[in-house]
Amino acid sequence: MDQDIIRRYGNRVGYSEQELERFQEGGHRIRHVRRLSEAAPRYSIQAEVIHARNCNSGYREGDRFLLDADGNFLSKFCPKRICVYLAGQLCIPVALINERLSEGLDPEHFHFMRQVRCPDTGVSCMGYGEVTVRVEAIPRTGRS
Image 1: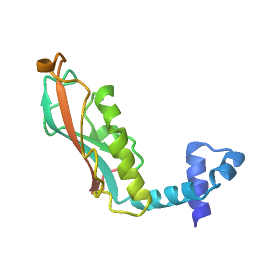
Image 2: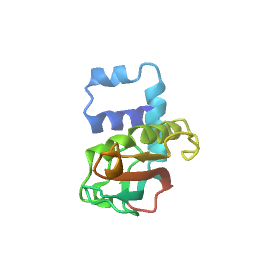
Image 3: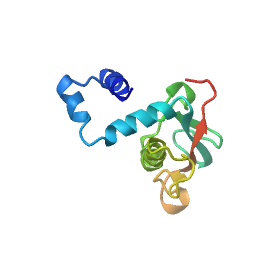
Image 4: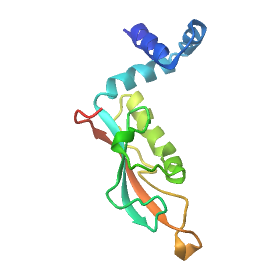
């Protein structure tokens, strides 16, 4: 079963036979890909705007960014504009959720960075605008 999952993964990302063999060294990547393939149909990752003020990208409270379990934006479920400054802040909480899923743990029980802010400090602190999002794993509802 693991070989089939690894082969499909390797084909999807374009691994050569040599890269596919190297991929299997250490075992951790096999476990990661297998468990994420099991979790992917059950979970998505959502970043919901919980505070927005003077955002140049136009984000408003309630806007949502939806990502798959691997951390890829599902563009049809995201605002039309993706701000690199805010998107860059999602790296750690998405990695924490991804890691928990790949270890077979509850993806909601991580400690740090459940909320992240764009690095802009807002007008009152010599910046331009400000946005805060809450990041969480959510059960999938049939959307892909």
